[in-house]
Length: 558
Image (cartoon, rainbow, N blue to C red; front, side, top):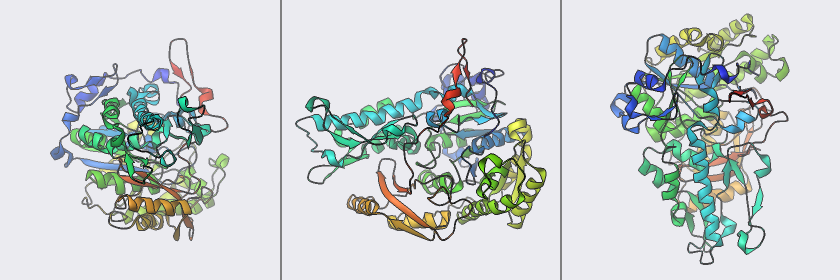
């Protein structure tokens, strides 16, 4: 685990008023929607396509992580602070934390040490109400669907057996994965099997991420596929007259949030899809606002490059029309040794053999990035326990592979410890033209698109589609949705669909269990292996150590 940061009571010390942070981006106080002294919503009116085209976009991705995470968000924050110290107008654009990890294993998602966004407790808990609004909009549609079934007239003719729309909650709660609702007689609804996903996996979350205006938001909400009628006609959210009220609930949630790093660098935070079960990137609007207001935009994508990185490029960039100018690939000595077979409890002990074996994982991510036409810079997120000889060995391994490698000490030193890495990344933004290169073309079959990602990015030898996936492929074709891109859900711990296959697995079969339809978001969700869209809590959840003192300060939140 990362070294715990001090209690959040100290995080407000030295915070600048949010109006001062906005001024650094050229945004006047009267343009902001304030949420207290240190948080605000940015004006969508400040979107500027011409200026955005001149700004530099830096994508921060990573190698496959350990279960504790390896500091990708922390590194993105450190790089933004480093760029600011070098005299650039920089902004970091991040996803919002989910309460699932906050109370689960990984803890909060605001960075760590001296590379953190603040006020960190506020951001981790109920941040400006965005997750709550997304959850309510999602569950409103679920209620309208069940009401349609309950109504004796059932004007839509919806068949309850075919309803695919679940409910969501922002908590790791495995008991909600599968359930039967509507028990108790006619007055309690129509019995049917359903379940819950975590809010980060909600299609509404994805829609808010991809919506490019309020009009686009409503149109996407209307396209949500709900199920079929008794005579096999598709039913969409617009058929149950849901989009208007759902959009009303999302009125403020569609607008990106402005906060700051501990060093006063502006930070735009918006939406929070996970990288393993959703697209793993912040919203198009948030990234575009960053590009419209700053010269350098540092943004991250969830988990390893095989997950968030691929989806950032194949999904978000394809939809938005932008492309990274540079790629920072975060690695840690301990993650490489973990991928090399070292036990989780022994990652701080020197082990050059495990480092050499585990480098194969990082090597595959480098090769995958090059497949997109990107030349990554490996940024080593340095831990106090790192062995200098092992860092030297990693640098040698990267050089032998023709890859730049630079260490960064942002966790302990903040932006001052990241200036060297920031300078290398800034230089990299000038070395290549923005030339999008995707894993597949939209005109390919769904099977071919999944196979392209699995073989080129994961390194699979073949893809196998289970019986349910085959049935889903026919449904997708019948609905005329085969042209959609794919957002594959798989484990984050391995390049394969099996979390036990560490390092660089070869000659493996990638298995697709089923394929969910996210027509409103604009993609399909192939689900692989044993991955679930409602996580569970660990044996000792982080929630056991979180508390509030008599002065109202949150303590124990890391």
